[in-house]
Image (cartoon, rainbow, N blue to C red; front, side):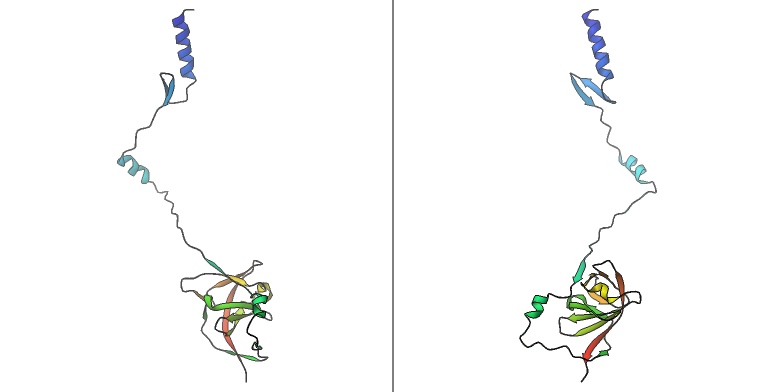
Length: 175
């Protein structure tokens, strides 16, 4: 076999081992590059009916805790005792979330909300909820108006319970 025949066999075998669409150029493998699509070709590809949309939103969750016992003990030296008898007074159905300082579960389906302005608010939960599920506080999703509204917003316990507040009332001491 001549030198030329050996060379031709090596070239043929080398080309057979190239990746699909590649060519040999001086010992280097050069891939075949597709031409850039024209605007008409792109318009044709975009004309199909399969469109998908991605929407990015900000989601903020606020945690309301029962309160730090150490901070409660470091309160003013002469704390006001809670009155033994409270009566309900009508209030608006919405509360500012930033105004809630703490929470304590009461009997059955009622939460006692401690407001930063020293008001006490009783929040009645929907029928299928128990207040004891919220002994570690609750989470509430932030709304555009920054309010927690009865009948509109839901609260989530750390145990996984999700409830709606059915009514809110201000609790004032009886004289």
